[in-house]
Length: 306
Image 1 (spheres, rainbow, N blue to C red):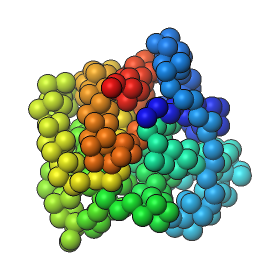
Image 2: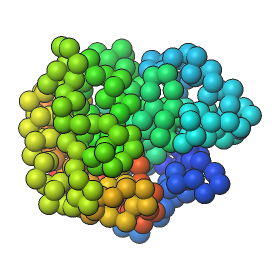
Image 3: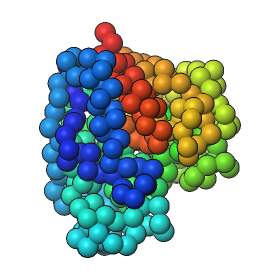
């Protein structure tokens, strides 16, 4: 199956102004590195598309989406307590992130500006105006009757919006390697958070100490693979945040970009075995531009490996 990569200015428009760490330049930094490596010649380049309002309402409350639309029109205010400022067109940009994720659906695809894993059903959080992952999960179930979905998150920050959004959902297989929440936002994701009620045991949180390197990643990664395989998923999602790479200004982890290739390669293989190759990866966080370019290109390389 050919790997599809979403690229275009409407997708890059999801980025915050005035020197915000999640700036709108991140897509172009990645794309220049893709071209330098010749990856643009090896993938299908897909045009970003926007979702409709009803798609956002699959995960988010109407009250919250009304707020995003209102602040998007004025370009002023904050969507949360301050991490996620409004900017003119934030609603349309968020719809493009979500729409591109939904458009990728059952193909093998990488959406670089995506993986907004902090947004809650009722609000924004941590630079995430909407939760495209949550929308995708609800959409796959409603439109494609895909129930067992594996979500793997290697971003330095815990994917709390996804975890708590589906904490009681036994069909959402959740595995997250992240920096220990005692040292990093959002302060969640302890090992004893394994799901609620009937979902107990379907969630795996693997917090690592600040300074964790590739050896620490590879020490826990086999647990992720075993956990995903045991869930017998029908679809696999990878959130491949680059803020776990050494030198990120907001985190304390010291992975190399190679872990991103490893995660993508191994999950792609599991998807081939279990999911009819239904596997998509999302760029997630990452605030050192060189790290973003390198780590995301490693994801694409991994998806291209035979």
